[in-house]
Image (cartoon, rainbow, N blue to C red; front, top):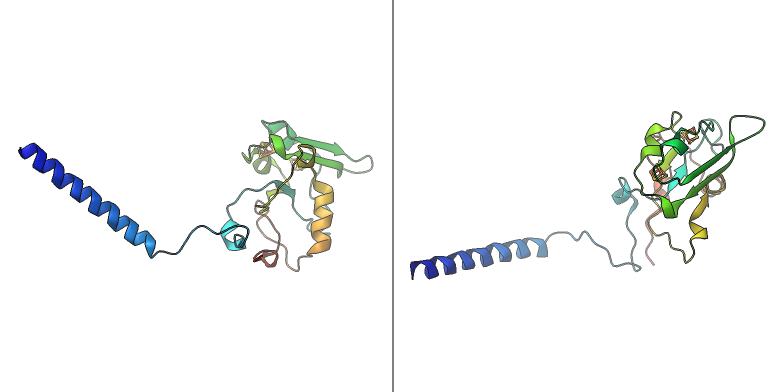
Length: 171
Ligand code: SF4
Ligand code: SF4
């Protein structure tokens, strides 16, 4: 008898706690968006790990900081990276990244001695073929710089350096 009463009290208490949480969240700001009508704002992507990109050069933005040392290639557990050193200099002549194999662990970003790698904030990357996920990062760097040159260099090389303007779009 007492046991049944106590169970009912506990049940009602649990219900009230659940209702209080629901009520609280009902009036809180929403943390989700209705895609594709809206997209996530840039400031909410600061810690987001999108596919890798090469950071912009310190002097010439469309030149990579990579010195083809291969440390990232050796550190990568997924064998996603292929860096081919140029014949004339240390700069790579080809920089390929297979995003389909990448687990976004960050080992390559951490090991790079020149800060040449960063995670991008590309959150809406879509493709129907695996081949399209093999990314040419040198080409990507040049395209980004041509599209949005930076006036001030981003100090943190482990974060994407892309300008914040590129971001908030509503369809
Ligand atoms: S984030 Fe990890 S898995 Fe992806 S390329 Fe870098 S080291 Fe490889
Ligand atoms: S670790 Fe950095 S400098 Fe070395 S090959 Fe990779 S990206 Fe280039």
